[in-house]
Length: 363
Image (cartoon, rainbow, N blue to C red; front, side):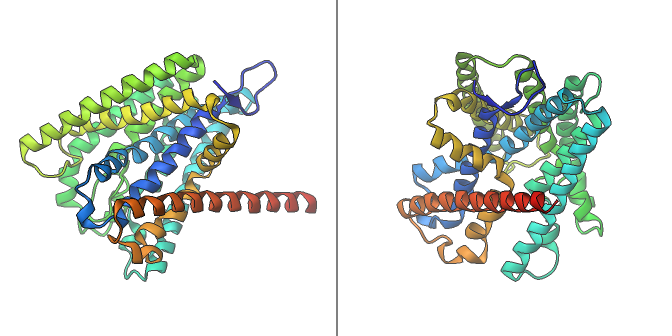
């Protein structure tokens, strides 16, 4: 398993290239999810190819939150090995969560301005960046550098699922239209503001933390990683079919976060996230350096990649393509958007490095 990073003398490195590769794959899956949804014409949506993109489209959200938990585990171990005190480690992740939460609202405000949105609904909507930010804060305050951290993280996953099942119906009927609805929407589903509330999203991060700590303690061998990938994919397939059958049998329409089938849906999402992560851990040492570096850069710049590509899919910038393309032309455009997003991340990194050099030279 290929590893990189800095560690204390005599101790193993803890930053795994496979995790960054997994995040890079998640970025590519995210782009195709949004782009095909926005651009493919209605007549092509019954095709097998389009349905495949929708199955792949259920991977990015859980894997990003899952990898956020993995990242907390890796960062915690790294800082502890460098001698950081527990309170400093917790503060580091809580501060990072706060920064991402602020960035999430800034990004929403920019999108609203670009599209000429009226009112504050789009700005106050709780999306995936908000969920990731809150999961970092919760993990920092409750799990990081605590006794029985693994059990606590697993317990948080259970609480997040139970809270979603218990509170979703009440929140929809009671909090919708409330003056504080945008605040409550960060934690539980409140229309029209919630897209990714903390409950049940936190459940993925809790298990990601457990997974991260376990692979740090005992890194999987290549054969084990591949076996985890295959087994997880099988579990995801079974859980996905069972979820659809349950929901269809109940004739409830689309799955809601308050339906008990959410538990199967959570197993499906976790298994997909684990499958892609294990695949990345297995494949990363076997990738050509150039391919690996492309994925790692995308993975490490995933927040910027998210912010950059959305206007091309759902914003005014890409409006000419909305529901206008067949699958072949859409695929060409998706590949182009992936390349353009990578270039945007590359440009961001170059400018950031130059700014750091200029700042260092000035001091």
